[in-house]
Length: 357
Image (cartoon, rainbow, N blue to C red; front, side, top):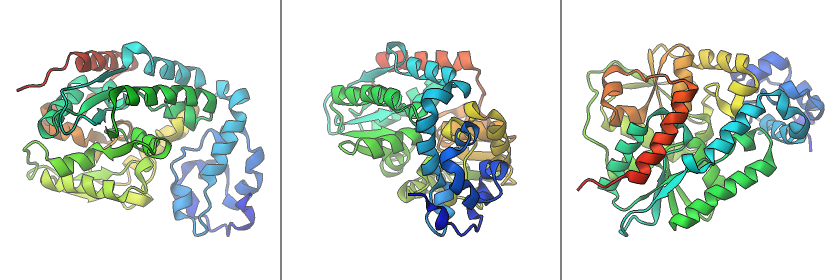
């Protein structure tokens, strides 16, 4: 069913979507032609869900683009940087970059922490510090270094995604984990949506419940808080992150478009690969929706996008566990080779990890 007849053409969805602004002047017109839309239009959708949330008729243009991408994928994906994405995914699921770690049986041995690809690529030391803290507050929690496969799914390559995702589920079964604690919001939503037999908890909810390292930022300049778009409807997660910032005594300001109305950082839907120009425009647009020089997020890709957009993007976990970043409020930016080496170092660190007594 196409909802073109239901669309009242109020253009609410266009106010926060640069893709819509670039390719149409009417959502109603777009809906009428979407099943035959050019590949460039479909693969420029960030899949952030903003359109459906602000639509008074609850129309999700994103859902139509999901279908369109799947239909176009066999013949068109090679025109949108997919070779690089596929290379990334094959490596992400390879033995050198994946592992599981079990600890002695305790009350938390049914749980496993999943740092995610972006955080592992960014800082093995940060991941190590998080694991040490988790072993203190929830001893016995295992570790799962694996990818959720979202890049292949969001670009419409469903057969490959299903094969990749099955590897994640096998590792969860090997761990014997019934609860996964995720640092990555894409992993969080993937598991919550596709693996209902596993309980999924955000690391930020867990830290809010179990405790954080002692710290205080009461003398720091206020920061802006960016909510990642995958968590648009995760109200408890929103509250947990804000609770953590208050416990850290870090003064923060909200974006006008926050929580369920948050806007994409520019990395959604693999936009940085399929339409780099539009991705950069979205990064700059979002970063400059606040006067704050520093933007804190709870997604590493979002933090990186805010830095690329002209501000200083920082992960909330850095403020808790990385002293150099906590002092400077600036993340180091890595190139591709360093990021891959970091993932390998993270894997080796997890394999050799020993609990500090």
